[in-house]
Length: 389
Ligand SMILES: *Cc1c(COP(=O)(O)O)cnc(C)c1O
Ligand SMILES: [Zn+2]
Image 1 (cartoon, rainbow, N blue to C red):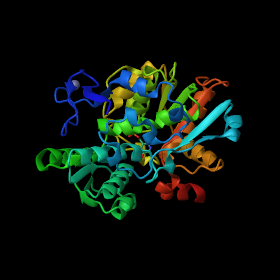
Image 2 (image 1 turned 135 degrees about the vertical axis):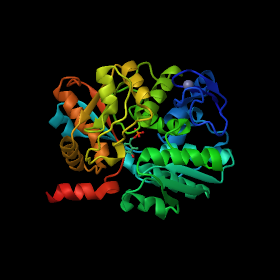
Image 3 (image 1 turned 180 degrees about the horizontal axis):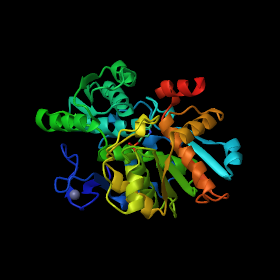
Image 4 (image 1 turned 120 degrees about the vertical axis):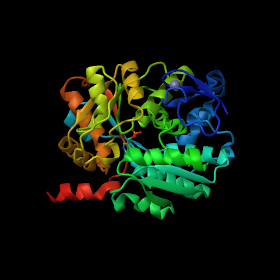
C-alpha cells in the first residue's frame, strides 16, 4: 500500500491512517489521504501492460488506500462507459462532448466507487457493524457493499424520508432507523453511535473520496491520457467533485498527464450554498429555506466539502453555476434522446454545459465531459410527471 498518512484539508494537522478518525480533531474539517507518490510513479513508469489494461476502478489500485488487494469488497464498480454524444455536440455548439455514465454502477450511482473502498477499510479495521446517515443513494450503496461483505448495516434517516428511496437499502438487508427531522440530525446521531457504540461510520469521509476520485482517472484513461478542457460535476456535499480534482492532481504528480482540465460544479436552484459563497467571497453558509426540488440527490443545505469545492474550482480556473429545475428536466430529456436515462440530479451537468456555452465560458472548440452521476430509474416519480405533463 502506498498510502502514507491523513492530512486535514484546512489546517494541515496530520494523522496516522487509523480507525476512528473521521474528521480533523482540531478544526473539524475533512481529511485527505496522502501517498508516497514517487513509489507510485515507479510502478507505472513504462508499464505497458498497465496502460493497455481496460479502464476500471481497481486498475488504479496504487492510488487506493487498501492493504490487501485480495480482500477488496467489490461488485465490479467503475469501468462505466464514456459516451460521445454527437447530436448534442451539434445542438449545443461544442466540438467534443462526452457523458461519463455513472448510472452503470452496481447500485446505479457513482457512490459505489466510494463504498467499495469504505467497506473494504471497515473489514481491515475488523468492524462488524457499519452505520450511515443518508436518505438515498448513499444508503443503497453502503447497504449493497455491506451485504457483500457480510456486515450489519444500519441506515439512519430523518422523518419523512420517502419509502421509495429506501427500497434498495431494504432489499440489500439494511436496518432502517428513523431519527430526527432533518438530515443534519440523522448525521449527528450516526456520528454519536459511531463514537459511543462502536459502529463503523461511513459517508462523505476521506476513504470515500479515494474511491470516488477514480471517476476522474477513468475519464483521462478513456481519452487516452489526453486531458479535456472541461469536466462538469453535479454537487451535493461536494465530495465527488473534490475527489475528482484530487485524483487529477495525483495523475499529474506521478507524470501521467502534463496539464489539468478546468472543473465546473453545478448546483440546483434553491440549494446553491457553494455558488453563493463563490460569488460573494464569503464562507459557505447553510441554506435555511426549504425549496421544492426535482434533484433530491444534490439538494444539500450544508455541503460538507463546500470549501474544498471552491478551492478546486479556483485552482483549476474553473466555474460554478446554478441551474433551474426546468433547465435540468430539459437536459434530462435531451440525454434520453441519446439513449442515456439519468437521474434528475445528474442532468444538471448537461444543463450547466449548455448555459456555459451560451455565456461563452465554454468555447466552440472545447472538449467537455459531463458526469452523469446516477441512473434514471432511481427517480421514476419525477420523470413520470414530466412525461405526463
Ligand atoms: C450523491 C450524489 C450526487 C452528489 O455527490 P456529492 O459527492 O454529494 O457532491 C450527485 N448525483 C447523484 C446521483 C448522487 O447520488
Ligand atoms: Zn484541521
